[in-house]
Structures are given as C-alpha cells and as structure tokens.
Image (cartoon, rainbow, N blue to C red; front, side, top):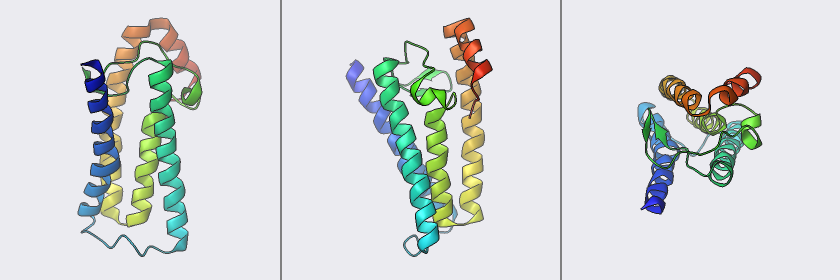
Length: 159
C-alpha cells in the first residue's frame, strides 16, 4: 500500500506541475502558437525549464533517499508518506524549498515560451497559492523538528 501511495504522489505531482499548469497557462493565453518562438526565447525557455525540472527532480530523489519520504503534502494533508528527517544539505542548502523553486523556474520557462500577460498572471496566482502551502508546511516542520528547524530557518532563505 505504501508503494502505491508513493507512486500516486509522484504521478499526481508530475501531472499537476509539469502538465496541468503549463496547459492552464496556454489556455489562459488564448491557446497561442507554441512552436515558433524565436531562438533567444527558445534558449531562455529551455534553460529555465530544464534547470527547473532538474532542481525539482534532484530534490525529490534526495528527499526519497535521505529524508525517507515524499514531498507530497497538500495544505497539511499527507498525500504520500512524509519525510522522516529534516534535510538541510543537498538541494536544501540552496533554500528551504528547492522543489518549489525548481517548479517555479520551470513554469517561468513556460511564461517565456508563451510570452503573454495571461501566462504571467497564472504564474503569479500559482506562486501565491504555493506561498500559502509553504507557510502551512513550515508550521508542520516547526512542530515536527522544533529547534533544529528554527536554526535551519535562521541560516537558510525560504526561496
């Protein structure tokens, strides 16, 4: 059962953040053409999307191996098994939310690709919703890890 829950968490995350969010941006943009974007935008888009996905995947793998858990915690509801250890190294040296940073970077690549104010507005709305999630998660981490988490917060930025 645990493995099925983990697989569900990973698939749900990929569906939401890698497929659904770009599709929402594209739909909000009036289904603008997505193939002919010019060389400069293509390079910027590629760097942002590949870099963002790489950071997110690194974080997920690190969280699974080192934290012995899964990142999928939605507004205080465990969607997949939570990590058992506070992680402060690996991608978590960069900031306290490297997976979200990677996702936001990936989606910023989508904004550059689509190059519409509507796509940018979807990105801002997503960021606002995720900020509420991050604050909720920080409360849980404070409860779970106490002073160790407080010290980590003092020395590491949120984003």
